Image 1 (spheres, helix red, strand yellow):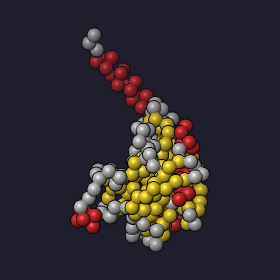
Image 2 (cartoon, rainbow, N blue to C red):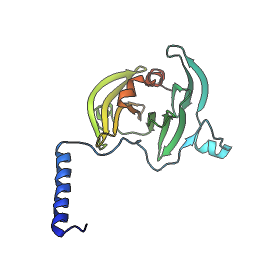
Image 3 (tube, rainbow, N blue to C red):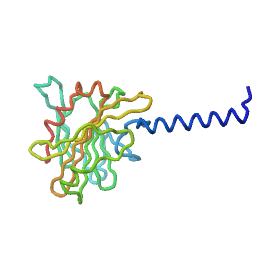
Image 4 (spheres, rainbow, N blue to C red):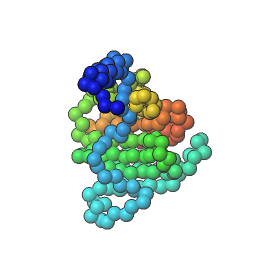
Amino acid sequence: MKLSRTHIELIIIGVLLLILAVHSLNIPIESPVKVTTGVEATDESAQVVNNTERAQTPIADVEKATNPTENINTSVYTGHGVSFEYPESWSVSTEKEGNDDLIFVEKTDESNTYFQVQIIPDSDMSEEDVKNEMPITFGWFKISDETITLNGENAYLDVYKAYLWPFIWDYRIETITLVKNNTMYSLLLQAPNNDFDKEPFDIMLNSFKLT
């Protein structure tokens, strides 16, 4: 059936009213995404680099370990000035974005569950700046914030919920940020909201160290 001009105008007005209603209710319409873009990842556990590449992009050492308290087999990541344990079944990759080093530890089950570390050298941000800064990410809604201690270092924890309208996505995101020796370390944890507390993020956090 061909629509008349009046019908088309009514449809357009209806769509605009719907968008206005969604905006007024503060309903997000985007999904959570990784913080970085446009850089090719390198799976350290699967690829071999030559000596020239190794000199340009240091590859971290990965060794086997066992976490008796969690009864989960783990590996140890060491590189880029940090070390931590992570579940052996998760995959590790690194990226370079400008001067920043990024480490992704991702659960290999298509759940978009991961632990990310971003190392930002020569940061001009103070601890107070880090404490007061909030990530500008559409679709994130802050639940809480607090000062914590991460392996003896003062750090700032922010907890968010993230949605994709109409509620196809429902994620919990935690960011932990600390500054030491003019370097900022930004950690990000993400998992479906209902599963977040079931994931072994405590293995990474409890073992996280600056080397």
